[in-house]
Length: 242
Image 1 (tube, rainbow, N blue to C red):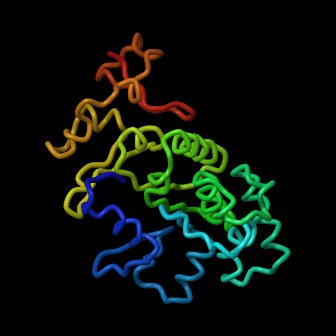
Image 2 (image 1 turned 60 degrees about the horizontal axis):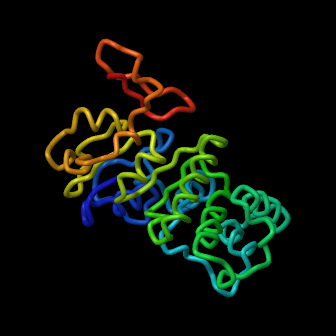
Image 3 (image 1 turned 135 degrees about the horizontal axis):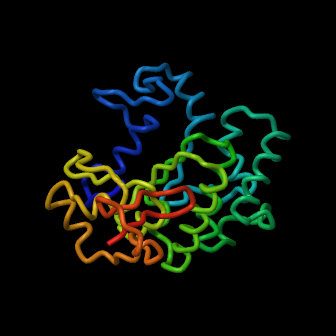
């Protein structure tokens, strides 16, 4: 999800797990409108279906990496033995199994964000919400985290809703991009669809001057289709033929 500051990106993602209460409309997950379920049912949805990674890491400084990773499951009442097994597995997924007993102030910014990601992965959610989760990181670490997220998605096939104001980041990790303007989603599509058919001038400005190598691949340039677009296939990014 992309848009200028104040366009509603963070509000949107917080509506999806009811950190902000919607005033009207529906939020459907597996056919269930979570805007109308009880608090107890909402806790169950958050426990099993949805996890969130914040920009600010949101780690407890007095807790070890392992305890931070377990925090959400502890609140959910999951037994200690089960928590530890899931926590260690989540830390392995993000490459931090050797730092289980370290504290947040002993870690780099990238490592702390990996802990935040591990905490979300520990509950094995169907949906992962990420609100500009990498924007505070140095460029090199940010790229590494983007690559890590793409690998995890390829392995586990979760639904990920990622908030970003960086077009390069959105094209790097997103299958589809939603553009927000003044609290509304004005266009949703793959990068090549939006680049070739922007919904309005606002959307067009996002893609002005974009590096088309991030969207098109020379591998498929010689392949022709009637409309000039080759659709996305599993394991590959968007492709276009000229």
